[in-house]
Image 1 (tube, rainbow, N blue to C red):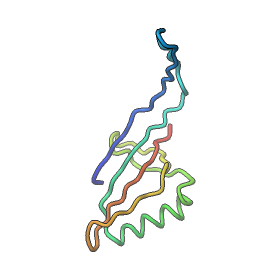
Image 2 (image 1 turned 90 degrees about the vertical axis):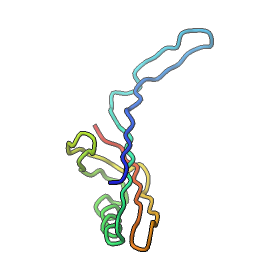
Image 3 (image 1 turned 90 degrees about the horizontal axis):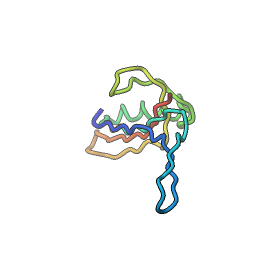
Image 4 (image 1 turned 60 degrees about the vertical axis):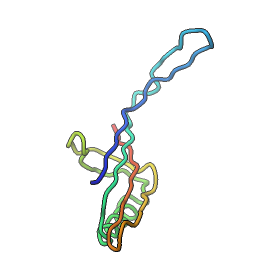
Length: 103
């Protein structure tokens, strides 16, 4: 993995009227966490990953188990966007993933 980014869930919903104190309430009880991962892969690794995404995850419609890079705990994740593939050189690709960690 070349890069990792995680955002804590924003569970507070703020509402307010001008010149009054904002009211804050909990938005939800779920703890979905947005995750961005960037990998460097060979052409062969991209083919294997693409097969995983298209077949095993049914084009991103079902979740999968992966070890969280920060906590090192096996967790359920799902894709929030389709993977992005960018060429870096003849046989090297950058693969960007946007996921959410499920509670």
